[in-house]
Length: 294
Image (cartoon, rainbow, N blue to C red; front, side, top):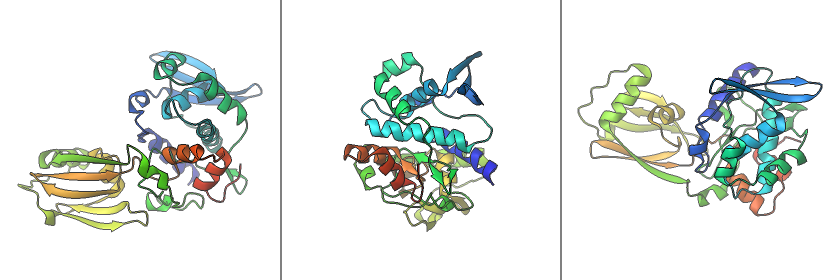
């Protein structure tokens, strides 16, 4: 179970849009790590070249990729601890994290000193549950409430349960309207599973929400007689979130989506808002991962 969750986590991270930083998140070097007496090193393969960096350098590049230049220092610390916990949780495998070089960090306007300070001041810190490193999932923005792990994947993790994240409603990424034509929907669904759909038109009766979870995200939806999970449809149609309303019109569907990402674990936007209110990185982690310790 643990190994399967590890790879689920990698997949989740690769699919997470975060607060307008997508342009920087396209680059994810193939990377794995090695623990030695000298400390943790990360081996990256980029553009046909091998590169070995220490954990601190790797962490600074990851933080710069997933955070905005105006992120609070406590938020930087939170993400440094999440990355360190992620590595501790995994026993093997590649790091599927976005990463920026020093030149790219400068171009983005990141404060190099603050990033390095955040990594240094949280050295050795990991998020634990019953004395073991947790699976520290995060997303960009929720719909105002995080989700239970069990609502998205099989199994339960007691520290990944739904909590309020009301700050997210203030994000510019909180709501987005996306219109998809009938032909595009048919094409995207067919490419994913080979299903042949020959709808001559779309009507309200052909689209039905079957079930939602307690946070308001769609668990199951039926389109043209086929049933999909909310996350499945989100991925196939490229929607920012599985929390959405819809309107069938103009031979297509207009989706009004709330939040970005899978909605499980920590919200980066919410964490930064909490930091702005004076909460410490420890308090932020405790809020989004209840029952854990650092």
